[in-house]
Amino acid sequence: MIELQQQLSFIIEIDQLKHVLRKSILVNGERVENSAEHSWHLAMMAMILQEHANEPVDVNRVIKQVLVHDIVEIDAGDTYAYDEDGHNDKEEREQQAAERLFGLLPGPQRDELMALWHEFEARETPEAKFANAIDRVMPLIHNIESNGTQWKKYRITRPQVEKRMAPVKEGSIALAKYVDDLLDQAVADGLLEAGQIPPPVSGGG
Amino acid sequence: MIELQQQLSFIIEIDQLKHVLRKSILVNGERVENSAEHSWHLAMMAMILQEHANEPVDVNRVIKQVLVHDIVEIDAGDTYAYDEDGHNDKEEREQQAAERLFGLLPGPQRDELMALWHEFEARETPEAKFANAIDRVMPLIHNIESNGTQWKKYRITRPQVEKRMAPVKEGSIALAKYVDDLLDQAVADGLLEAGQIPPPVSGGG
Image 1 (tube, chains in turn cyan, blue):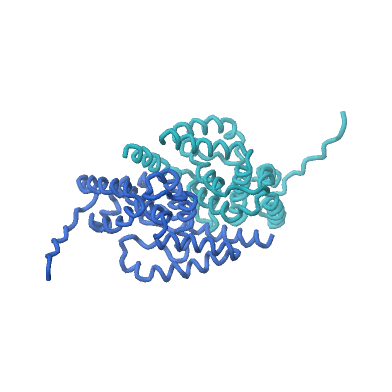
Image 2 (spheres, rainbow over the protein chains, first blue to last red; image 1 turned 90 degrees about the horizontal axis):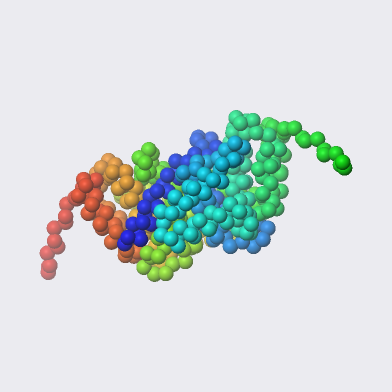
């Protein structure tokens, strides 16, 4: 019973993820998304799109990773994908958050959640590569479905989005191709600025 | 690519679950919960509390069931646990919703999600019994953490809550015992009305 109480304290604590707001606007345009509902949406995306992973994946492990991947934001906050300053100390803030939050659980479960989160962050296993791929694609879909509102607001350009999307191909070449087509269309439709095309790097010397 | 587009249409469609509002108030008291974030929270609860199931469960199947179990509410709406009229045509409304929503997917995936949802609703397998147990306990925790606001508002009594909690013991006797203790405390703290204790049924006839 003591273990059950400890576990329920964790369950109650993570209710706060429902108050961590992301930059993505929901498809109906009404409000921004929170990280709890985003995590649910990603878990569904993993179930539905698993066949498009580059390598066969254990979808159950992908689902667990995406369910857990944002819990650290309860303490560390959501860092906007295009906030370069925010990314400087992101790793340290999130590690501290993981220790406090997962540390509320009995030892073996603390270790299990910590391992899932580290695996997601490291992007080395097929499951983590695929989990990261869908985590990158989801906000792109939200941006397009909400007419590029956030891209326009923060004056995001296509090269910035492409840099952010670079890990998608590691998890799913099929999704990466789809993203390219979506970006062509988004620029053509005026949802996203084309941005400066970097000059070709001169060879030699 | 056509299959990927069809799958993404479903992913976009179910974004609407984030707008289906439940009666439960979040732990910090700020607002009611939506069904998408509730589904995420239940999936985490399944991961953390699986050892308390009466029978060994395939936790991955429990997780998938709870991720999927409320999607029908996009069309059918959330029916409040204590709304008896709403429950009269709930089954028919939800079946139609399942056919439309899961029907957006390629055939095998439509069948998979339909099967998960039917299994959850039937409460016959160990996984479905446990999934239903945590789905009943979660709003109780929210009610207690938010000082019984919704119980007071809708004048809910302990016998009504007990009736609603009856399936918990089918999935987890440990959780059912915990619920009993919580209800004792909730009545003692004035969060929940004790209600009328029904008179003993006279024997014979």
